[in-house]
Image 1 (cartoon, helix red, strand yellow):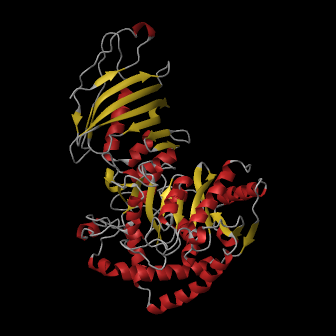
Image 2 (tube, one colour):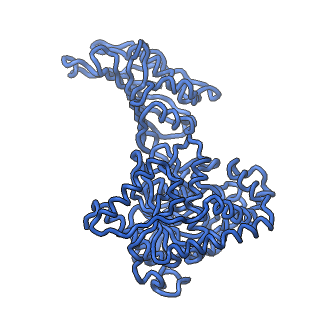
Image 3 (cartoon, helix red, strand yellow):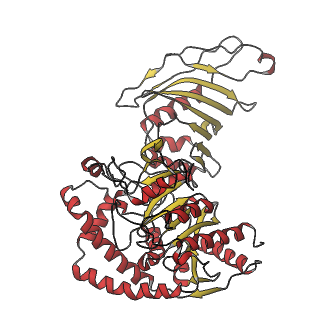
Length: 571
């Protein structure tokens, strides 16, 4: 295989033709680096100069390390400090630590050969240089690597890099199946031209439900009918883009999946996407689809919406029919949607929650015929769960509302003992989850990832008395919440803070998050997350919760709030 090497010529030489040199690469074995890379340096030709020998040696060693996924060696090649850069189509990572954390979860690159290297010195002393290399993957396709190297203390380091990987046929961390379209919707209707990512819990006639688990998918039977929630969107004119990933059995809040990988966060590079509706959320955030059809049991729409800067609506419990949807915990399971803007969410809600759209809805608007009161209450216990920087951003939002041309009344309230509420919620959720999936799990030991397996193991030990007591504990909590939103709307940050990095210990964040998201689920109330806060450059949602059945009016109110915030309080 020939390897081409070029460099920048000095001004008198720029008219000369760059000469290519054929090098004989050393092919690594499949058990070593499973790739081919050039070794040594080009001997040079008249009027040209080779890559400096020590830079070429550093490049060769780096390439061997990346194919072998030698994390220690790769860390050592990137310059230390907060200014080192690494970019790819997913976004930009800034700082050595961020790059290292990303790499620790990425895994190695597929086997490849370096076919071309182009060299450009960037400084007069030769201590800064640009290398661009072309890789050919053994499985087909090409990639491009651009690196700025700097010699520091006699050693070469990468100070900036950009990777353009081969174009994938689809991102399998986001999609189980995808098409353009995957299934055509009606040729007329209010959602014509929009596309939908369907969470892998919904029935689509002729296809299997996979529930985020390959063993479950393999054994599932093709569905005979399409779920009403899917059919509503098709009837409105939207087309299905595909079936999107979910956390296993929707029993998670992080968005990771040990079998298929973690979908990318479309707003924060290297961060968790939020679960369990991670696939639809990432598809919408990245522009692969316009609508995410998702489910929310304990926050699985609201959390990914907040993490990725989306609008997300959890509908009133039982308002949208759940036939043809694989359940997790029927007492709390709801259906809803993710979009990039409020106008699209309004269009979806207007159709799917009205008589003309959903066959389950008995009237056109019902409780949403009138606007909700322009009056907000702030639950103190929930705000106490929020990280300090997010709490500050939320308080600035409230202050801006109070000082606006359209100031709503704002009042702090005590909502509930969140620890007690979450404990009771988790008990009922776990008992129902085990009734739904326990038999399958017993028959398939080791089929689910460790984190999900641990949750089901805890669920398997919940007794009937435990469940009955928990249900009794939830009744007054639900009644108190329903009373609180009779004449006002709850407002608070959707989650404790920005999406955690994939390398973070998320247990504490998960606990605080579920304490914030569980109350709406306990009371069966509609909740919408609106991307109104920015914390450390990342989005954080603001959650609005209203009385049951006011879902359409809640979206209208959320849009009014977003418009006011965007205008700086001026209407």
